[in-house]
Image 1 (cartoon, rainbow, N blue to C red):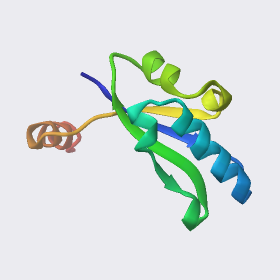
Image 2 (spheres, rainbow, N blue to C red):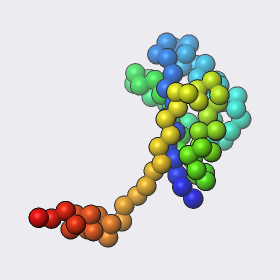
Image 3 (cartoon, rainbow, N blue to C red):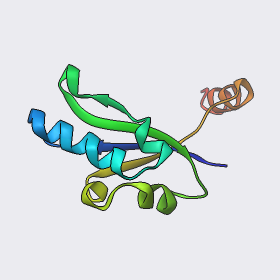
Length: 92
């Protein structure tokens, strides 16, 4: 099943951080109650990784108030064979 990183930006004010976290907690979603946040380091974003069928399903998980600001990125891993193929196909 595809994996997606969901990144949600919020305003930098301290109360905005608290409201963002509260909105995530109130969803009751296991995904959002275990989000990681960068606020204490000045990066006012939350991140979660989900396994869902497609990008639209990942986007739909985000609370509506933050949906327009959410960035959804499909994740992938590389095998050594894939790397070897990519590198060998670009040799002069």
